[in-house]
Length: 292
Image (cartoon, rainbow, N blue to C red; front, side, top):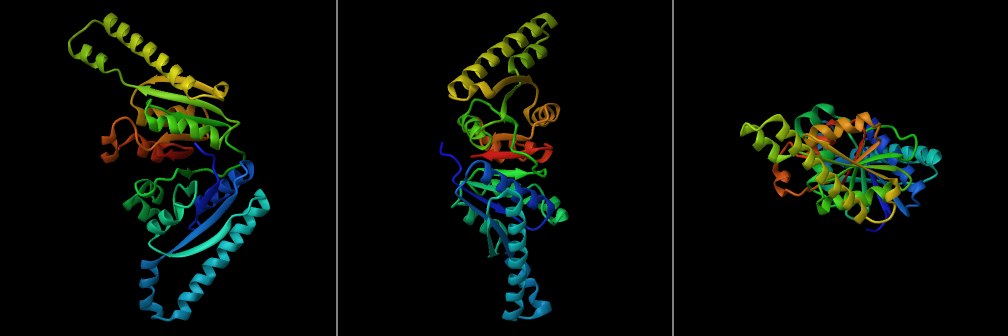
């Protein structure tokens, strides 16, 4: 997997999107990223609705775009002064999601804030970041906290799929100096069968321990196969339901970034509203990187 050559941060001037822009600049500076862009999209439908108040005046529309450009220039200047990394300001008009997706196709990484400037709309329709996941094939970093330092504690959720392998590999690219906690959450199917069949507690306990040992061995092989940098990685096996366990583990271990693959072993997850990726994105307290 290639390193991050270019980065796109999208902003709507909300506090979360400012965090995203600051994190993008920090990554740009620490990872020597060659190109960065700070994007703001003026929603075309919003501009059309303004016609009832301002008419079809081209001059008024130009003024709105000019004001947005000036605000974006100021934000880019402020971030450059702090980080030392330049994000090129760019204003577009159109459908917000489509414009971000099209722009992101030219970049290695898309960075977004966890919430936008319109929390009521986000509650009704899902956040921009969640809706973008189904539209773009680029890695998407969703920023929830103000960045103070580069990532030092990263959790990678794995289910031994190809998506998990990519997630683990990408974690080392985006946080090369971090401690990587590689977590697999398993639900032993045989244990449920034994419970339903009335097996004794001793038999159920033995089955559980055997399943855990097998899973731990599989995780060690998975990490070892991932290649270099394994001394920064710690494997953890936990029994439970992954969507709920992963945010819990992240809180207990003071994780700053969760890295997860968009697609797991079971493609049916793509059609389930409560998939692991979406649940982690909505319930975790830390930043989340979703790798396709």
